[in-house]
Length: 467
Image (cartoon, rainbow, N blue to C red; front, side):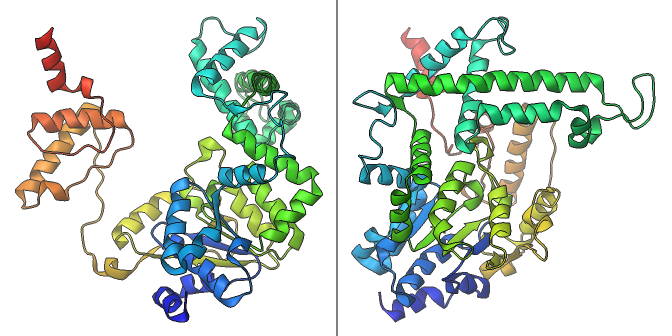
C-alpha cells in the first residue's frame, strides 16, 4: 500500500475519526455511536500503524465480536494490502482462543478431561446432561419443584451456567454476596425502595418490608442452589469428553494466568491490540485483553471501540461496565475520542432516539466528566427533511397488524410505491400476524425470515386436497 492509497481513505474522514486513527500509541477509547463509521476507522488505523511504525502485520491483533465482522475487516484490508491482510491477526475472542490452543497443544492437552478425544457438545447432549442433573437434585432443594415443568428449570439453569462461565463466577462468590445482602442493614442500603418511609400497620418507619425481604431471600437461596449444580455440570462434561466453545475461553484465561512463558510470548507478539464492540465483551473476555496488555502497565497500545448505548448482548454476559473500568484504569494516559457525526439517519430520528436513551442512568456520560455524545446528522442526511417519527399505540397485536395495513394503504394512495415501504419488527411472531393481514389486504410483500413452507395456507390447502 502506498501513501496515495492511504490518503484516499484518510482524507475523507472527519476530524474526530482522524484523531482516532492518528492516536497510534497508548490506550485509546473511542465511543462510537451508531452510523458514525467505526468499522472504517478500525481498518484505516491498522493501515496507519503499518505505515508509521515498524510493526509487522502479524504483530497487530484485532478482536471483533462476530465472524462476519472478522471477515468484513479482512476483506476491507485486503483491498489495500493485498495478501498481507492475511497476516494481520483478526479474530473473534473464540477464534483467538482456538488459535492459542492449536499453537500450544502440549499446554492444553486433555483440558476437557481424561478422554483421549474431545469434541464439542451438541444441543441434544447438553439437554440430556441438564435433565440428568435435574433428576439428581435432592428433593429438599429450593429449586426442586415437582409441579413445575422441568423444561423451565432446565432453561433457568442453562442461563445461570452461561452467566457463571462468561463472568467466571464461583459458588463461593454467590454465597458471600447473599450472606452480605441477607443482613438487614445491608439490604436497606441495597434496596431503599423496600424500606418503610412512615410507620403504619404494616411496619415501623425504617424497617424492611418483610414480605419482600423474605421473597428475595427465597430467590437468592434458589440461585445459590442452582449455582451449586454448576461444578457437577462441568465435571460431567469432562467425564463425557465434551466441551462448549465457552470452555475454550476459560482454558486460555487459566493458562495465561498460570503460565508466564505463554503469556509473555503473546504479549511480545501482539504489539498493537484493537477491540471492536468493546461494550459487548464479557468479563472473561475482558480479562484476556487485560492480561495481554498488562506488560505495558498504564500505557498499553490498546485501542477499544464501543458504545454503551448499543449493548445488546447482556443476556450473553456482556458488560457495559468494561468501558467504564477501562476509562478509570488508564485515565492518566487515556485518549478518549467521541464520534458524533452520524451518516445513517436524519436529525429528527437521532433526536427521537436520544430522547429515549437519555433516560438510561447507566450511560458513560453520567460517569465520565465532560463527556457528551449527542449525535449530529452528517453527509447527505444533513439536508434530509422527512417528517419526524410518529408514535401510534394499539390495543393488541391484531389491532396493530390491521393498523399497519391501513397505514400502508394510505402511503400507497399518496403516490409511494410498495417497494419503498419497510416494516421492522422485534419478533417473528409479530410478522406472522402482519403477513396474514397483508395477504387479506392484497398487499404484496417480502418477508425476511425463514419460512416453514408446510405452514403456508396454500400448502395446507394442497395437503388437505391430497388427503
